[in-house]
Amino acid sequence: MPDKPKIHPVILSGGSGSRLWPMSRAHYPKQLLPLAGPLTMLQATAKRVSAAAHYAPPLIIANNDHRFIVAEQLQAAGIQPRAIVLEPVGRSTAPAAAIAALALIEDSPDAIMALLASDHVVADEAAFTAAMQTAAHAATQGSLVTFGIKPDRPETGYGYIRQGEPIADSDGVQRVAEFVEKPDLATAEGYLSSGDYLWNSGMFVLGAQSYLDELERLAPDMMAACRKAYDASFTDLDFLRLDPDTFGACPADSIDYAVMEKTERAAVVPVDIGWNDVGGWPALWDLAEKDSEGNAVMADSLLQDVRGSYLRADDGRLIAAIGVEDLIVVSTADAVLVTHRDRASDVKNTVDQLKADDRYEALHHRRVYRPWGDYNDIDEDSRFRVKRIIVKPGGILSLQKHKHRSEHWVVVKGSAIVTRGEEVTELQENQSTYIPKGVVHRLENKGEEPLHLIEVQVGDYVGEDDIERLEDTYGRD
Image (cartoon, rainbow, N blue to C red):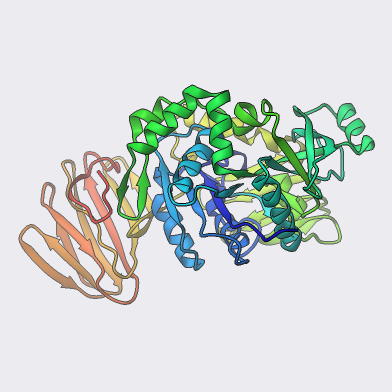
């Protein structure tokens, strides 16, 4: 094979992962969680494409609400991204790929980009790296390449790719004869027995300019909107923000529908890399180590006659189960999911109902992450709310005031610098202060250890939107 081309990873991190509720929530979705190992799924993806010299620093496309968490997780993993691009709204993968390609060709006109989801598991990273090199070589010849996973069962939850003829001068690469939708079981069994079909992985290796040329030809309105949004983008702290109005006007479509199913340049690399798209709890049961009864257990548990089940309690809660089979049981601090494995895809319906009922459990956990640290709700009633707040070293909350509530702060660990009106004081462990309603205030941690405090809010309204920010280090409204 010729010299290895430089590959520019583009990691898409904008999904909500609703089928993995209650652990995955809109404000802290599955790609930001350590679901299949010690690293979060985003961290594992970024590490996977940082292991060899022919990878350039990754470009991350993320949801605006997750920006600080994404940045912190990459830093914790030792990954310095090329950029973190913030989407004001989701427009699916075709526009996201266009934005990435526009960014790459500014200083790398011949860039080869690898478009990757942030929530896939790849068990055989050596095979993945070899496949990336094969795909990148084909992309330099003008092909738009996807990875096709060699199926090991008649799966009805994936789309399929029918392989065509081999591509000359690109060993291990086939033309795409056809993309097909998710089949019924009988059709999937026929695909498996024929040997001609592969699972559609949703991973792509493309010449950045080649992709833009095809998008311009096949979806000119989308291309025009993406170009306008990128041209109007601006830097905010360490992030690149797309213009909300122009990107919001962009048509939404997947790269499969907008380009790959219509282009004559589609190619596929058949791979066996231990791939799983972690689309729901059964996928994590598949990936997990199991006991002699087929149970995957990640909890303090007492089991009697339990088989084929997935039991998880990240909140430390004891799970006791008796005489059940093929269940998913997931416990968090504020919710418990119980479902048969065959019905686990219906979890999305539960999330939709939570949203319709305006329940906070659809959006966030009791532990809520902020750029300065996090807080955990302890108790709440109509006129009060109690939180445990942790401010990381160097963290500083916004200068703010409240219209409806007063606050009492008690330091239980570390030291706090408190601004209250014109007064600035330092509080140590077991000291407290009172912030009257309407008084301008700020909290910061200038120490080297995390600051822990208990906050008691009292007033006629204690919602999170009763904050008037006057100044903010992190650029929030």
